[in-house]
Length: 576
Image (cartoon, rainbow, N blue to C red; front, side, top):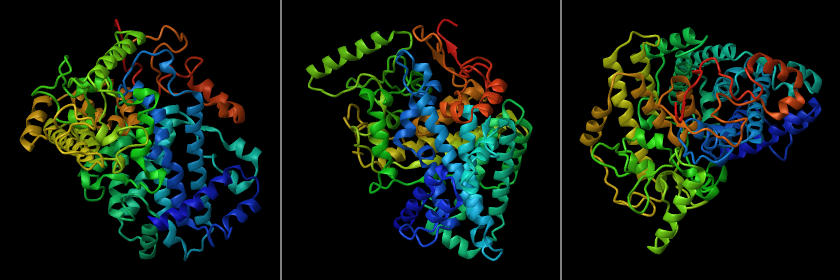
């Protein structure tokens, strides 16, 4: 990765162009000999990926923000009923999310402009970077649309090319999210078709290998499978409800019925993302995750009662023969072998007091530092302490289990294909097996793994299931309904992708989540349906933002407005 990281410095230089106001300033930075002799399309592609890194990859900041927002609202993170919890990570974090996306988009505009200025002889060597850069942008645009609804896109990110601030601001109008989603589906199909031709310039492939720091490392077959798997993710997101359902179902049909032309990720060996690199903090995912999860006395590392229910844990918190084999590699128990989640029927003070009492008891038993409430697995994911994480933790963008479970839902519900319960079951079985393999691999390949220990503190013996155990468990949970499949899709996302977990719940209402009302912060008493437009937009793009608010907000905050693809209400409140 050494050569690739040199390109990241180019990316950092290019990022500053967002605030540049002249073409001459752009040219000076572009050709700065202290950075590189030439900033070309391939180097800018690396910069696009790196600018997307904060939210594409399993970074500290992504988890820190998501755990209190999509993680909480989507039922993955533990809910201790603290006041103000339904405001999420807060407006300043939402603002950061917004700004960082437009940094990615602006880099892509720079790449596109550089490509457009090439000679016709040079373009074939650089074309693949345009398609893959656009794929990264679309992956992030999907996330933005799933959070905010309408956003500026078509005219956004033009300042480095024009140097005209007022012109750039006038172009930053909000595009309709339905139209943008259709554009994403169409654009990703174009990329899939381009990659399927097999006619990519040989010099381009050599260049891609030197600039691509993902697991693919320039392998076009892996990028093809990622692109089509991303298409499937987004199409499924749109197939259940709303104005994009027809286009989404057509996309699903095309992928499922043309597997040789549109291959997907079909095994864990094909999972797409970025491997860990402990020599670079940006890619030391275990260190970053451990920092985030051990913040606030470990509160951000807790798991919800909904997760434990999905893992078929008995009410007493003690696993039995019917419990999911993944429990041991996804969660840590307390010193008494119990997996206990926050009880949303109790007050925040009662939840905290119980933990304090138990911690005192553990200290008297010489078990200092133990946790009463269930937390994310310390060997595989959360780490043994702040900055002391699993050095081998990868950042996975899409895994095989997600793809198989998505196909299972598509066949069960007849999204673009004939409804087929038998095929749905086959893909369900495959998906749960792949998820089981994925999480056990995280555990066993961890730098903190000790054979036979279920956690870093080893409160229970670790007993790996054999193939028959896994098969028997899957057979016991299968039912030909959307709830069963979507609960497993949601569970597979877990803390690895809490936004997509929230998307599953908002889209389908599964798994069924229950929250207690926040009676202290009256303006935010329940989980939201979306995030509000951030302060920078209200300040610097006020006219366009206010126009979007008048179109999309059904109430003053924006929190309780429903996006077109989502259910009006995706959860229940205590007492309902």
